[in-house]
Image (tube, rainbow, N blue to C red):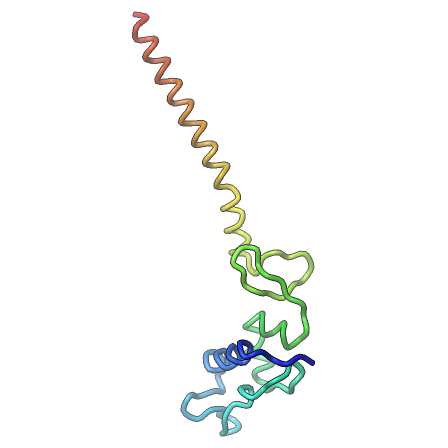
Length: 133
């Protein structure tokens, strides 16, 4: 049982107001006709709203990992926390692809530099051959 930080409570509030279909800014929780009790959750083992737990919580990997007790890792590309499953180092396929592209950039630069060197040596040869006529 861990107490939620102020940051985590704010993330829950923001997540509910943004993603929960049962929440209205004007009326609160529509099925209960009261304020959403997810706003008052203080501990990771607190009872959660069934709808929130089943439909809304899985859309935020960091909150999901926090409430389910799954260990998290920091993405090596973007720095976002994600549920660590196995040896995964990136939070998404897009981050993994960006990392591959970034790791290939120096090789492309090196190829480009080599190409520039070859072009300059060809120019020198052409100049030298121009005088051989």
